[in-house]
Length: 90
Image 1 (tube, one colour):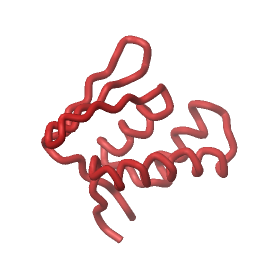
Image 2 (cartoon, helix red, strand yellow; image 1 turned 30 degrees about the vertical axis):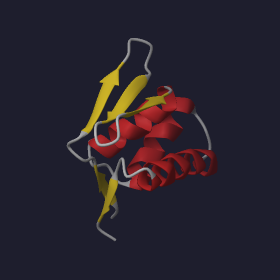
Image 3 (cartoon, rainbow, N blue to C red; image 1 turned 180 degrees about the vertical axis):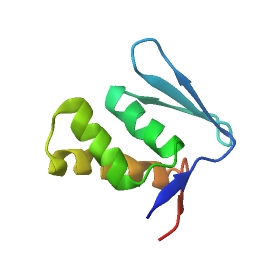
Image 4 (cartoon, one colour; image 1 turned 90 degrees about the vertical axis):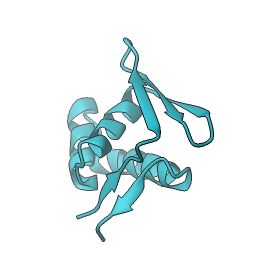
Protein backbone atom coordinates (compact mmCIF):
# COMPACT_ATOMS: atom_id res chain seq x y z
CA UNK A 1 0.00 0.00 0.00
CA UNK A 2 1.40 3.37 -0.97
CA UNK A 3 0.88 6.35 1.31
CA UNK A 4 2.50 9.76 1.40
CA UNK A 5 4.05 12.10 3.94
CA UNK A 6 3.80 15.87 3.90
CA UNK A 7 6.97 17.63 5.07
CA UNK A 8 6.63 19.84 8.16
CA UNK A 9 7.48 22.98 6.20
CA UNK A 10 4.37 22.68 4.03
CA UNK A 11 1.51 24.81 5.35
CA UNK A 12 -2.06 24.40 4.09
CA UNK A 13 -4.92 26.76 4.79
CA UNK A 14 -8.47 25.86 3.81
CA UNK A 15 -10.66 28.64 2.50
CA UNK A 16 -14.42 28.98 3.01
CA UNK A 17 -15.23 27.95 -0.56
CA UNK A 18 -13.77 24.39 -0.30
CA UNK A 19 -10.49 25.52 -1.79
CA UNK A 20 -7.07 25.77 -0.17
CA UNK A 21 -3.79 27.61 -0.36
CA UNK A 22 -0.55 25.72 0.21
CA UNK A 23 2.72 27.43 1.15
CA UNK A 24 6.05 25.67 0.75
CA UNK A 25 8.22 27.44 3.34
CA UNK A 26 11.39 25.99 1.83
CA UNK A 27 11.10 28.04 -1.33
CA UNK A 28 8.31 30.49 -0.36
CA UNK A 29 6.04 29.32 -3.18
CA UNK A 30 2.26 29.32 -3.03
CA UNK A 31 -0.04 26.79 -4.67
CA UNK A 32 -3.81 26.60 -4.73
CA UNK A 33 -6.21 23.68 -4.70
CA UNK A 34 -9.72 23.63 -6.05
CA UNK A 35 -12.36 21.51 -4.32
CA UNK A 36 -11.20 18.26 -5.94
CA UNK A 37 -7.54 18.97 -5.25
CA UNK A 38 -8.36 19.72 -1.62
CA UNK A 39 -10.22 16.41 -1.27
CA UNK A 40 -7.23 14.56 -2.72
CA UNK A 41 -4.81 16.46 -0.47
CA UNK A 42 -6.92 15.68 2.62
CA UNK A 43 -6.70 12.00 1.68
CA UNK A 44 -2.94 12.29 1.45
CA UNK A 45 -2.85 14.12 4.80
CA UNK A 46 -4.85 11.36 6.46
CA UNK A 47 -2.44 8.74 5.04
CA UNK A 48 -5.15 7.14 2.90
CA UNK A 49 -4.02 4.82 0.13
CA UNK A 50 -4.32 5.84 -3.51
CA UNK A 51 -7.26 3.46 -3.87
CA UNK A 52 -9.10 4.98 -0.91
CA UNK A 53 -8.57 8.51 -2.26
CA UNK A 54 -9.88 7.38 -5.66
CA UNK A 55 -12.96 5.87 -3.98
CA UNK A 56 -13.56 9.15 -2.13
CA UNK A 57 -13.42 11.10 -5.40
CA UNK A 58 -15.79 8.62 -7.09
CA UNK A 59 -18.25 8.97 -4.22
CA UNK A 60 -18.04 12.77 -3.92
CA UNK A 61 -18.37 13.51 -7.64
CA UNK A 62 -20.13 10.45 -9.07
CA UNK A 63 -17.40 9.85 -11.65
CA UNK A 64 -15.95 6.67 -13.09
CA UNK A 65 -12.95 4.95 -11.55
CA UNK A 66 -10.87 5.85 -14.62
CA UNK A 67 -11.65 9.54 -14.32
CA UNK A 68 -11.10 9.61 -10.55
CA UNK A 69 -7.88 7.65 -10.91
CA UNK A 70 -6.59 10.02 -13.59
CA UNK A 71 -7.29 13.05 -11.37
CA UNK A 72 -5.69 11.50 -8.28
CA UNK A 73 -2.65 10.19 -10.11
CA UNK A 74 -2.10 13.48 -11.92
CA UNK A 75 -2.13 15.55 -8.74
CA UNK A 76 0.00 13.06 -6.81
CA UNK A 77 2.57 13.02 -9.61
CA UNK A 78 2.68 16.83 -9.61
CA UNK A 79 3.00 17.05 -5.82
CA UNK A 80 5.81 14.49 -5.85
CA UNK A 81 7.66 16.43 -8.58
CA UNK A 82 7.42 19.60 -6.47
CA UNK A 83 8.57 17.72 -3.33
CA UNK A 84 5.36 18.74 -1.57
CA UNK A 85 4.71 15.11 -0.67
CA UNK A 86 7.02 12.16 -0.20
CA UNK A 87 6.19 8.56 -1.06
CA UNK A 88 6.09 5.89 1.67
CA UNK A 89 5.92 2.15 1.15
CA UNK A 90 6.08 0.41 -2.19
